[in-house]
Image (cartoon, rainbow, N blue to C red; front, side, top):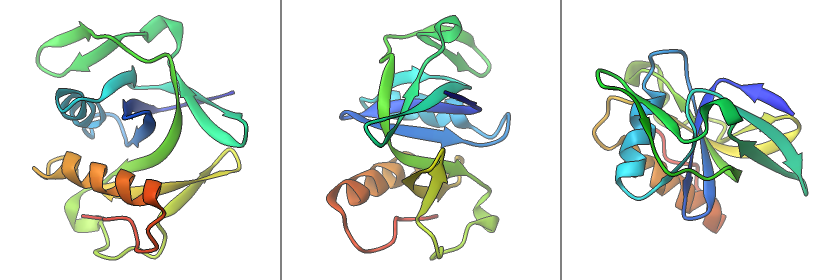
Length: 147
């Protein structure tokens, strides 16, 4: 089991691991996805482990059901205790993201997972995440959408 600095949400049974430095917008992107129907798994950090050759994210007990809403505080929400990770979202500034990146995946603890780079401040950020999740789930050969 590995502790990772990331926020995780579940969209239609698929885990999305949102990574980025402190203050980059992980919780904000998660809140927008939750507002659009996703479920919270873990905010700020989670554990990942391998089960049946899949990467699984789980919430540590100390933060279960809690999400930080910057400018408001910590809120309690319903949550999923664990989920298989189907997409990694790496938050980055718009000017550092390649229009057509060479790689559309990353490896975490030996498991290859589709990945997309997103600017958290882009209004369409959550729509791009859902497109990337759908594309990776359908096995589309085109690269995952990037901003």
